[in-house]
Image (cartoon, rainbow over all chains, first blue to last red; front, side, top):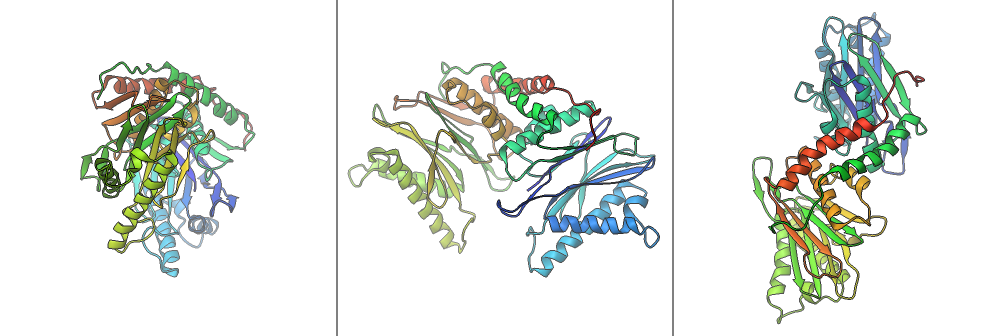
Length: 249
Length: 249
């Protein structure tokens, strides 16, 4: 499993992904699931990947190969005029990769090779944009109403984002919110694991404003993890108490 | 979908279930998923049910029919000497019901007719006990290490229980904790819905200490729901702030 979140704030984008991959519970590895390409001052594009590792690696590799041979063919990541075209091409590659894998093994539909991706970034002259690309290759874009996307093991960490998110919050608070969301997920599901990759892209910076790999001994993540338990308990005790002396229903 | 929780505390059992059933998103009904039988002063047994409604209703009906004809055959719920034997019989009925349904429709394994149940209660002279019964008919019992069971849509409401649970908490605080857990789940998943059924069984009372149906206009649930958002935000802001001025990783 996997947990990745892409979040749009007024000030920019905050992205976070775990690194655990597993085939069963006894075959666990660490793989980066966050990939960034940038042309300083002109564009930055970051992909987050969840699902079958072979499928997502194949998509990333195909995007990478084109990046390394800029003369030979049109480079999607570095030359697409809009983020929409980037998302379209990522969707095309994702669908064709999954279709090929499933075709080769006679599987259909929601098979073993399924995967999804978050595409985030900004190109000069345009707004930052955030997309979620489905295994079928189609995609949706974040909006005022739905300003963040989660992929992978999304449920444990969702309530705190729903409650804590505020579009006008600082990028630092956005990081804090995702740290709490990931901590809740890590506590509940072994298939999501440290280290975590964090990236912050401030609006109009066209480069990663901040990048950090959160290891198991990361003092900030440890502080969040231990303080959040106490903070939650205090929040819980601040709620009105229940009384049995009410009408029976 | 469904969300049910059975929680064991030092002082007794706290049980809660939603009432929404759905076939797709456009065919929604309200059904009780909590069922209680008791012999005052001697035993109380409560079942919570999740999964295919026809399957769980068939199990409950079979248990009910036996309850109504006590002379004709051994009554599992009212005459079993131990909770273990009750759980065993519930498991046997659940497995045979699912097997029959799937057999009739040529389905296998984790098919459409799957269901699971929580069996809670106490028989005089013995400890309160709490079991989770799987579709296969086998079951596990709550312990010091795993003192609560969730069935149905379990993930959204799990982090707060993991963080807030304390075996020595009062029954009232147990209710409060489940209210928060259900509120988080309701906020995130349309297939879990009000009203909620609540039951509290104090140790050695052999009768429901408290029963309540939480409707949409329930003032306590509304207070929990609205205050929990603020309490969570306060908890969030009490955490140490993140700073970008750290080593890059």
